[in-house]
View 1 (tube, helix red, strand yellow):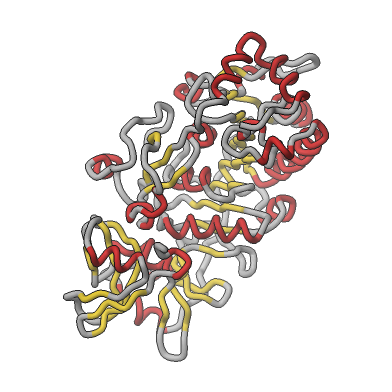
View 2: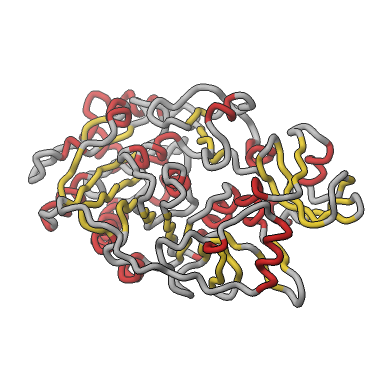
Length: 450
């Protein structure tokens, strides 16, 4: 690993004291890798029967495991969205609060989607996740991960947090603020963060984080929770930011995190001038204490009475008959109330949280594109509603047909003509158009195995 900046070393010596040498020693070891099971697609019990990636459980994440597998991105189970690869410390913030199944959740700084997808696994059929990313290129990566994991009731937005808060004022039960930071906790994993680190950048990040937190307040409804997280160690970006927030917002309090997260993290640090008596309830994830990189997290609870969702019933724009005919031909069943149109495209979306046109990058499940006299289905349609398809092609993980499919090739198959979902061990991996015993590949070119 590259030599650490001297100013940074001095900062960490003051923070860690006698533990500094343990921290420094741990940085010489390889980064720890991990993954989560996508429980929207497969149960933990069923996944453990086929798990090739490593069986050591992350103790504070029910569906998390340490990764022991090379080139996991090429594995069919990854293509099928059964897992999400994520650094283990980064999983801790989403475990801090007990999520209710019907919550509305906002992830304000979501790309590439680790915390968003983790939170989505905790929601039920009536819960809605809004994932926001201000940078359009990163927003596309976020959308791709949500599509791969086959999620329903997700909305992806691409806007600054001030605009986001004004669009969704007093809306969410939980707001995740995984704030852009100086990245000190990622030095071992991403050495570019070492090159970019300066004291000035730390202060700039702290100012931006305070602004994002203010917008989170606007989007949160009474009685809700803000989870504030960074992947850095600096007091300015962590405890000082939380303390300043609490002084400005007496309607909030810092509350304990989940006991399992607390066990594997260190207390927040009470600095000179700190006015928050309970700042120790904030948590610090250190690589010399638990397996993973650096992370800070604090749960901020709005003390007001819990508010109900008071949205008026929302009617999706009615889709053309060509869409419903396509769904009737393709699926065994679906909820017609969820079929609508968003930004001109047919979608499938549980409309408990109304999303106005042109507000979101994408909304719900994109069914497909309306051509002159037919529907060209979207990859997300296969990945999300594959279990409802009338025509299913179940392939084993080691089959030649599955290998051909993931490489973008056609293959012979005994299946009725029409759109069919390709499945690996019972989980959707994509779609094909079957014609006279030949499966014509519909797997997106950008996702194919090279």
